[in-house]
Image (cartoon, rainbow, N blue to C red; front, side, top):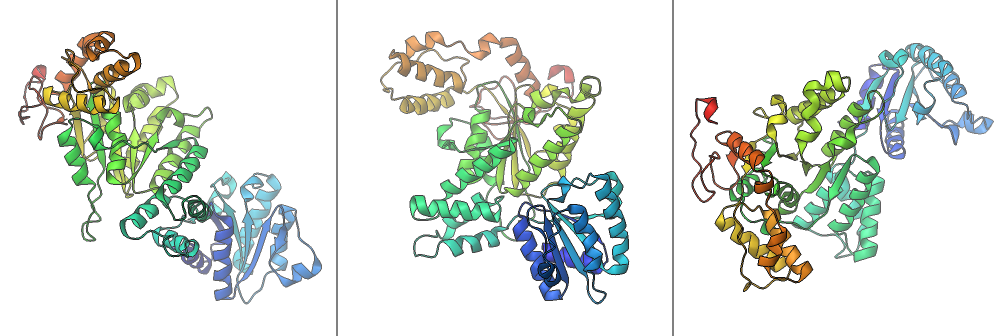
Length: 498
């Protein structure tokens, strides 16, 4: 529902205290002004710089009322018994904690039902003192949707060839989702200056700067794709199908995401980064550690704010790396951090379960046994996949990819790569190029993680057997079978055998 529609309903219902959260105050005030003009309502606006504005009587008397308390008191003198009068207070959360302001607002909101006067606070965040919480209703001024972004783009790109069409235009609008009108105008204008046409790369660049300001999320802008990843065929096929374009009839069925468990170095993070590029979505990286705050309630507020940003930037891929390290302490949170981790986990779980935005979540973990069971239950994710050590055919593909990437000839003899991961193959190729030595000599500097942490890797593979889907072959992962073999759905009834 549009802001004007919500506001009109609340005014007619005589809610005399209204709090509007908006990141575009001028745009919100413009919409309110249009509403008041169409309904023939009185309108006053106040900010600390320009004071009180909006009526002929005030302009003629040159009484601008820069004092916030005086602005509230002036509302009754401007009241009209024949029509509602609205007072819009911009960025008033900076003044509202004053005892005098609290008392004045309490009296004015109560009196407003008789005088038909309405106090509207326009702010980028909601910070209502406890004394006023029951007196205000809260409305949201939404960021521009795709149709509004397209309208902005067409108003800027007026010459032939400046505005892309078809799929390219859809990619531009996807990239612009989550930007304010001001930011979208700037991104489109900068793109015209730089490329002579609206280009998705410039829009993503500006979006990355916007996320950098929040300090909670980063936008991955790499060029990785599935062609840069050897193996993982079942996982790739699953995600491609889950994120395929949907018809209008099936658009209500939203994919949730995948949880990737695996041996370190088997491509979990690389897959998450390549997925966004492969499906044409922005890839947002959420650092769970960055959500932690020093003040009481700050962690929970940061978590909610980060998830609101993610919802606004849909469609997107949300990447949470090594999730067990950020959430594994939730079970003992009451003794170690006064329950902060538990409350943060609760907020994340509620969002995973209830969000309706087109956001595909990819979480990676090296030790899923440390995660709380409520995170990995059904309907949190679409699938739990295990990424095992690559088999011979997968390793051959990986060798080819990295030999080409680092400019190594195919005539070189490959070293013994038993128990190697994709990361170790890449390290060997990089060292061969860096030291200008054959691959067999560079391999002397690589010690596989399956050797250095053999016990942990073996324990992880045993745990995943019959519990996780195979990332390589359709079906359930079974420990002891090579990735070339077919995974079988055989669930042991004896937990000691898993």
